Image (cartoon, rainbow, N blue to C red; front, side, top):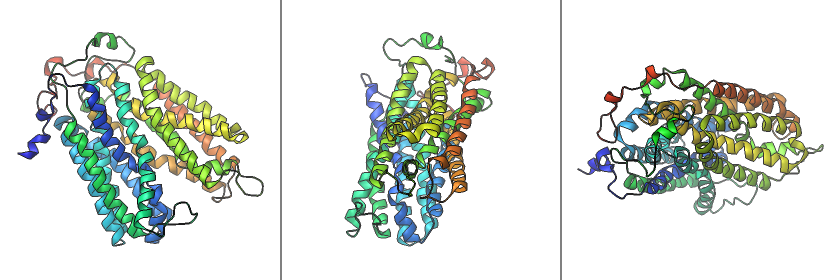
Length: 469
């Protein structure tokens, strides 16, 4: 049967298969689901089409991120059990269906259908798609897990770099009256609906490239020259394995949950307000900013590139210096940068941009490094399932970060009238949050042997389905 093509045993690589063919399959999925960072392109159009508030439209993205965390947590064990091909296929179906259902909601002016489509169904596709390549990459790259996961997860950060200009061009094609170069020009709801249909079809086709080409290593495979004992000699790195059920019983899991939550919450503090923030920082006494709307848009694009580059550069660096030290850098240097941004960021646009770029590179690096950190602590047995559970920290941060920053800014004044001083309390609050994560990371210790899987009972998920049943 055609469905059997998706089974794990049909994805075992044959002799001579190059492991370097696996990162492109992961990128095919992550570049597509990374579109979630490009929703601002059509946000104003949906506000006008539905006669809704920004908050009501923003809920679409919030639902998608919450569902990402929940579906990754609930479906993580299923992904490990059934293999990457079936998981990627389910992700492609949900992600594409989310756009099509959302398009139906826009066409019929039923906002709840957009919540259901892009938010719930698409969010499930986000969660399953995000974690589906992780355990496979770690099995193919046990010697360089940070590099491997950085290559793939880099795609999620870079997805908006493709989706934003593509969506803008397509909206212009579908609505001749829309001109993105003209301030105040807004695309019609019909154009956004056509955009959703187009993205749903295109993303499904691209993600199927990953589905058809992904492979898992054969039993007993290891890269040439790989010595597990050498890696296990590093601090916090184990050669044992911990199941997903046992991992959530360990203090190490919750310490890492706090670390990820703090890093993401602080990053969203910049990302959520990037465009208005740089204009407000350099607003003159007359209320006019020296930073134009176009320049602010370029700043957002630069931050997207920093987010993407950080996922590869810093995650790869963690293979050399270790996972705990790299997070001490993300959080410790991040505290210094946030403090400097609050106190001296206004003195120069170059300084402001440099600090913000470094902060967003740490934000991206934190996402890409965490699967390798999990591999160090818990082994590779069910790392995909454990990663899924840990991503609930992302869901929580996706809600907490904007609430904290927007709440503080609302108390400072109205949008368009804020200055650099108004941002200082929010930025210093992020310093405190990062400090909590810094302490949590310092407290990490090796997982107790009582949580390890007995070697004789430890099945290899690459050998048979149902290994984690």
